Amino acid sequence: MDAARTLEPQTRRYGLTLDDCRLDDFRRLVERQSSLADHPHAKSIEKNVVIYDSAALVKATGSNEEPVLAELCNLLTDGPGVAVFKRAFTDLSVIDRASEVFAEIIDEQHRTKTGGGDHFAKPGANDRIWNSLEKHCLADPENFALYYANPIIELVSRAWLGPAFQMTAQVNRVNPGGASQTPHRDYHLGFMTAAQIGRYPIHAHRLSPVLTLQGAVAHCDMPLESGPTLFLPFSQAYEPGYVALEKQEFKDYFAANHVQLPLEKGDVVFFNPALFHAAGSNVSKDILRVANLLQVSSAFGRAMETVNRTRMCAELYPALANLKGEGRLDAAGVASAIASCAEGYSFPTNLDRDPPLGGMAPKPQSALMAEALAERWTTETFIAALATYDEKRQS
Ligand SMILES: [Fe+2]
Image (tube, rainbow, N blue to C red):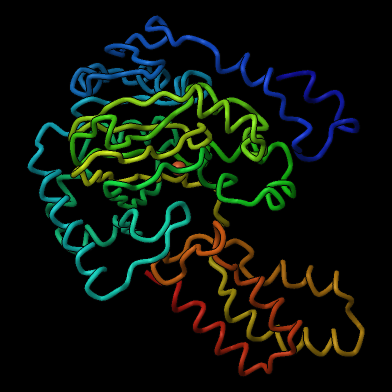
């Protein structure tokens, strides 16, 4: 137990702010060299990124997988935070068939002008398949089975999240000319605005990275000109990092110091979701850079009971409107009652129908209810809006 953390709770501050972000501290953390000695099962270190030969790693789990699990976990925690698993897919026909499925889905999106907005790119620069996991499974169950039977995906997911992890996936096809992303961290806190992040306690900054794992399966060879992801090794361990990326000097540091590795079809990359990263620019003439982005979530972070919040909201709405109208509940009271009734988080949702346009996250149910009360919607109008809201979030 870290005594310093337990002895002075009264003097500790609640959250983290821009004042906590000092580039010198950050540089001390990230300006380190990865060493093969810290990653005994790895094949090599390239640009501070740990490289594994997938077949050798799977073989090494043998009858005692704990040393491998520990190595992967440590790498993601306070090691470089990113590793490439070479030839994770040995049968490239499995990747090729999945690529065909994805291309058909993208064509269909173009034909029907469906497909959601993208939180990180301008329209046309790329093609997204939100929830490629479910679409892939329904389109070709056998290929899905062969694809997700991959031992590296299972091993690294379990190493980081423990058992009962939940897989989700999204395809990103970046077309030639597609611009690079701005450096960012990923879900959860990485998807919030600075104002939202500021409302969470410090321990949530430590918690967010252990709730998910980011991965990418390369569906084609990705030379540097095609823009494989830019990473800043060791940046995941910087505690104020979700806030720091608001500061220009941190963005500039990322621009000057990131690393980028070419990938081959069938390689898989996994990285800590708090690692500073950004998709690169595709300056190639003709490479459609296709990656299936895996976002694996911990089983934790969910309530124990199933609650029908929509039914509750519908019943509560007229009562709350009356209490508000009669002045028996003030604005704070109304907000508190909503917080215990409505879903207050935007996710999970269907990003095709509920796209994160104009921000990183769609509107949560609680915001819908607050809006309805503020604008004095009738109960019928609110119930209809709830139904529409539920409908668009279904996969
Ligand atoms: Fe990202």
